Each structure stands twice: as C-alpha cells, then as structure tokens.
Image (cartoon, rainbow, N blue to C red; front, side, top):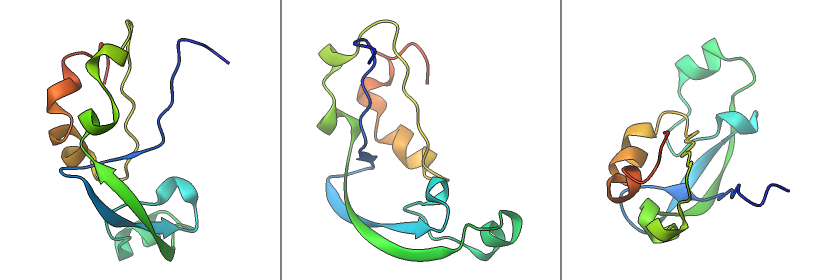
Length: 99
C-alpha cells in the first residue's frame, strides 16, 4: 500500500513480440531461456512443466521516464536473461538511482 512504490509485472526484451516463457515447477525459476540439465541438477525442483505465451518489449515500451520518481530502483529477476533486459533498457537506465 505504499503510494511511492509501483510494481510492473511485464517481460522486458529487445523488441515488442510474443515469446514463450519456460515454466518451472518452482515459479521463481521460470525463464524465457530454456531450463537446462545443469539447472535441474543443481537446483532440485526446477524441472520444466510447460510454456506460456507472454508479451515482451523494451522497458521504454512500458515505462515513460516521467514516471520514474526519486529515489528509484529497477529490480530485475529474469533467470539468466539479464543481459538482454539491460540492453533493452538503455534509454531509461540513467533515470534509475539503483539497478
């Protein structure tokens, strides 16, 4: 209920498109990237259980710089897709105090 906090549940990527997210048995381990053998071996309970179509777009598709209030935090939790998210956020990264 903090009026200064805004959560956006969206997918950030290089271009506006529909992609599939690989769903894990543990929802905190789902990713656009394939769930590989090493992940399921090292992190038990993260097996692939299905796919879901999601909309992906660059950060500035969802967020205008005027909506970024100070102090600002950009939290990314994307299970290995961080580099793509950061590349897709370059126009807005300078407006965040913390990433």
